[in-house]
Image 1 (cartoon, rainbow, N blue to C red):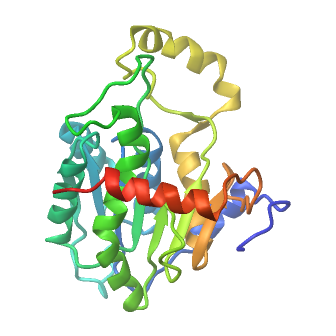
Image 2 (image 1 turned 90 degrees about the horizontal axis):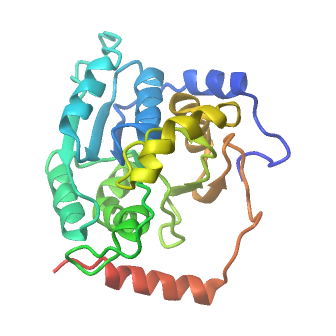
Length: 277
């Protein structure tokens, strides 16, 4: 446990703690998800707290949006002790297909032998029923669940390499007790203002998105503010499995469901469903 659930950190504490992040190594972070919303917010905060001195790899479908986002990031601080030029990479991937996720991971591993942070927040909204991918997996489940497992399994060697080098090796969103030396943070980010509804294939959702965002504005937070809270949780997490709330607090076993037998069955099913020939 890294902080008590009864002691929810204030936003000022969160920002101060994040700003104090000063790794002795050149960190590498991979973001699976939209080039907007929570994933973008976390990448924005990561670039800020590292003063631009970090490798940032975005895995998604919109290269134009990614390049625009990269251009908005802070330039490296110019630390003369760090002569390595930070990488800004976009890896194209349709996460509804596990083979695509696997291919994207192989591309990342060909250039990065170590990965310190893996952030997975892909998602989309639709009102339609089951819509299978070419692999027979429902596309919504593929994006929200299966793609994360496939990416974690593929990038695990690089995460272990970072840990073996004495560096951080942390994963947000996916988690597993099978790698106890790593840190896994499953996050509930809360109500975040994103364009997930506006970009929905559902005419009803896209048409009503502006109205609903306006009505719920007082109850929601910006993607960047969400990113600050999520990085606070990630940077403070120790080895093992953690569940964090929208303010970066440790939820421990609050509203935790399932047992070891169910967990094992889900693991076996997921490995089979995401298998790549």
